[in-house]
Image (cartoon, rainbow, N blue to C red; front, side, top):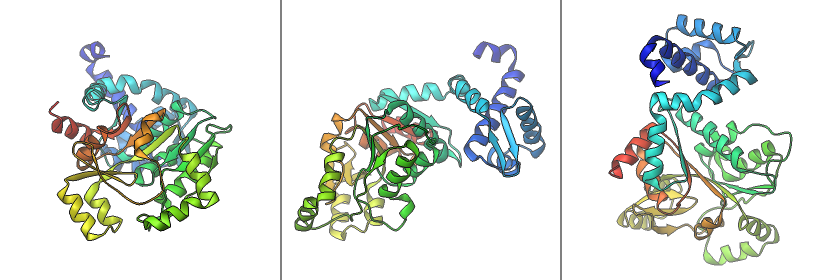
Length: 334
């Protein structure tokens, strides 16, 4: 492809343009042409021309509700991703970051307004490649996990044994809670699921009493057998404030230089756990027993948090975007 680019730069530019249009339709489908124009910054005439060509090739289907990719369009897009990652330099960036994090693999989405949606699609594909009908999946809450669930395809046959929330979840936004996402993902994967509708920071006495409840104890037993963990990562101080932790705890987190939060655990820059909320959920001390851990977070401001958590999750699979990837390499001196 690099040689072709040298002798026919106009050809490769056309290919890249059509690839970008195809990829944008997949991210936004079903969508109108105007939305693709705004997302790509191309002229309406250019987008209309490219859509007509892609439609003539039966790669894009146009209907009253908008444009979407055909099955052949999906196959073409997925088949070309490796080539276009190399052409745009993303594959090299993925290799560098994989080495810097000591990760099993890194997948990077292009930085754009649609980066989170693209990360969700990348993460959903990683999940589908790593799950089988006898596995248990634990999923955390948050917007990144919501995009993953949204992107997960509907399955006609069981793709997992059970889906569980990674921790108890009570919050303001029901659609982003681990319970809700676990139920939705289970429906798509034709799997069973469990719920754990509990708040953070229970008193030690109440926490122990809760664990004795038959339903909760059964859910905890299933959690302990989880094979795959789907995890979002956030900024420690922002999450502490959002979850209304005591002022004293927030000051201590600041004093301990906490930079990351994942699944109720707060980490300093070296990946050391400096605080753990009193809640029922996945035990971070046991995650090295899991078959697969997929972390999803993007944006330059998440770079320090991702880097910190990577110290505690060797051999994880990271899904992020260009902005976070470049900043992590800078912070890591790579």
